[in-house]
Length: 555
Ligand code: GLY
Image 1 (tube, rainbow, N blue to C red):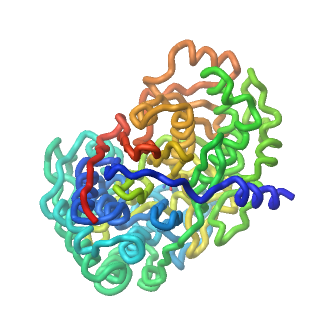
Image 2 (tube, rainbow, N blue to C red):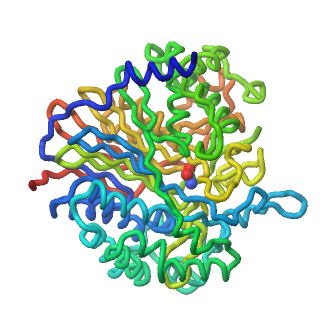
Image 3 (cartoon, rainbow, N blue to C red):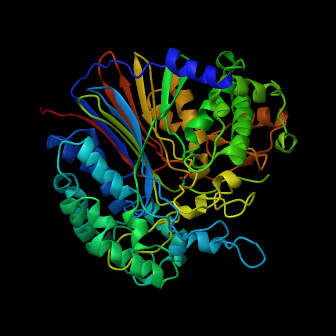
């Protein structure tokens, strides 16, 4: 019955996409000005949004090494305007063939968190190079030698150290291996502002990919070099693991929200499932008519309930069975039934511990002059990943293995708990929160996403709500954010962001507040007016990114 209802929802309500007028304008929002410029450089050379996505992601791999890179993975939501095709490229990292469920436990059965976070045992098999190659072969117009050229130039010429670089390096400095130190530090010290970080080895690796595509990374000299250095430092990668890496093409999750269609990340991201579950709950409440304080209460309650489902049920659905009812409106109505209009629920009464402290990962949004779009969230997990640069390849490896459940019910670095659905198995992808998203009707389009660990999903949810309520791109990225993830039973609030009156209102309803002395997220947004084709773009004021639009004359 539930399955039937879900299928009907897909078939009857959800159009594939909507016609859009094009103004000749293109827009790119990314976490670093040089990455945004790399995208425009490629568009000016006759490239499309997919070529620009290759250029932006490769540039980010060089100039924002804390967030993503060739040693990582991610999800790429694509819309091709000519045939309205929408897919999600899943370049999530996979567990090596020698990985096993208990690999991060000591003899007492306790998790040794250092092993899943720092050094090569923490690294899963990267997917980003496979995605670059696939995008170029199947969607782009230009060869990799053109689209990777800006990144290669940045790697050779260097980029300037910023406050954000210093902050993240301060957090991860102790994890770096000698190869990483030689690139990212000045001796043993964090480089001063403006110091140029030059990456000659990474430039050579990018050049090899530009010449030979994915095989240059997954086979041959670079693969051998990476495996040798990983094994020498206690890691378990094999050459066969690299050669066997497979990019997956997924159908995105599609959901109707008010009179908009949301297209978003499928498993192994929890994003599409949880945002759908949250909106389906809101639809059973009096959300759209409520005032701002009431809305905040409803939102926290639906977050609480959605994250509880994440803990219990979600994992890589190529390996485990994930219940289809999670995105069924009928199920959402059931779990929302006990939400009281004025009083906070108790998470323990719903029924395990988790919260999320970090920022990691990167996101960029692109719409080109012909209406093609890319919304991509890419990661190496923790800032600067595992801190391990593999031999002389210049490739900084991820620590995405920490996104698995090292021990059922035990929180990971972001204090996210998961259970057997997300336990480690060879070849499996760790459950993610990355949620690149499109939201549209025949009037307006939103392209968005953000980094931020376990908070990604609730940030994207709030971005969508602000869009539906009429905010523009700048308003959406600037809006204050809150977060609840079931356990611990606390609402995290950004500072600045919520007035005394707003905090008092939440307390009066029984919510426990954790007022953070900081902000979170680095959202990159594009909004299109479909009637005029005009685009506006905004980069989160919390970050150091750049959003801009420009007229592109080609074709
Ligand atoms: N590594 C962060 C995520 O995938 O959610």
